[in-house]
Image 1 (tube, rainbow, N blue to C red):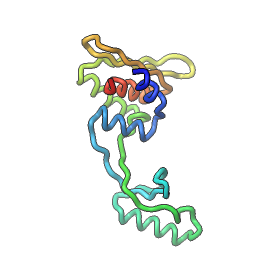
Image 2: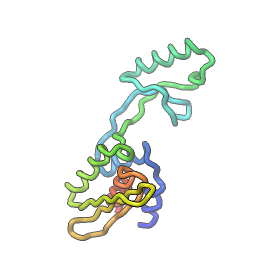
Image 3: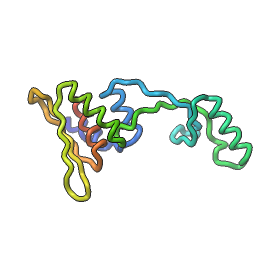
Image 4: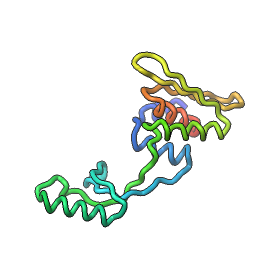
Length: 150
């Protein structure tokens, strides 16, 4: 359990944490979006509703600025998850999912600078999982991941 805690604690509020929550806690599939991405596949600079829209945007931009850094970019499909780890309304969906699954969820705000601790425990007094973070969404997500990984 200690290794799980360290791995989860090291996750930053971002795409990777959102993807884990979406797949492992919420059990949903991502929405797929067309994007203009860099050659390493690590950054996007434009998102569109279709491959054609992204290809047109990229070609038009390169045509107007031939020496642009965009010349190494290409069009690809990327998954888009709800922003569970940074958006409280998305994180609250995680809280509701945990409650429906029979867990009690407690959220405390304290300290200065602002800190949040989230504790999730089984209603039948099973193991208790707590995380402290700089934001409520991050703490909610990390506590929920501990529940599903144990």
